[in-house]
Length: 186
Image 1: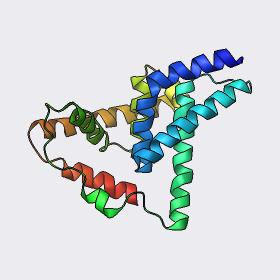
Image 2: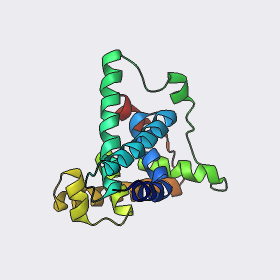
Image 3: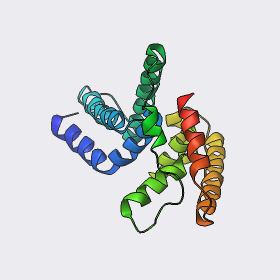
Image 4: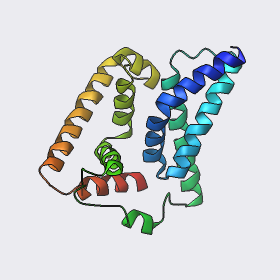
């Protein structure tokens, strides 16, 4: 692919997909700085792959897979070296309780908390489906069957509905958040 074509494709994808990719990487890595680095590095790898002539049918799926692999490498590295993602003070300082809806920054945080009830695979399926990918396409990119995609989506939607209902009833968020933190630190 020519330089201009590759640059235009990566730029347009970066504009639309970067925030979602950073959120996904942040959930997996536990650090916003690491998530931003992973996302930017992934877009550079995409550009390099396109320039080398690799055929990439779905750049969004490709970037999601690359980020997932990079997070796995990072986790293995941290486990080997005995490093935690964040300090305990940072984890303890996470806000708990009801979020005030009038603050726009908190609305984004509330969506992140809703996604915390999902497994990584469920989140991947939801993100790809939100990008208008078909079940079959999602299955190909994640290496699972379309029936598995359907099951994961149904499970994820039930979890999100339950979490949203709990929030609307004024129940504390801390249980979902504590479970997500425990799952991340395992």
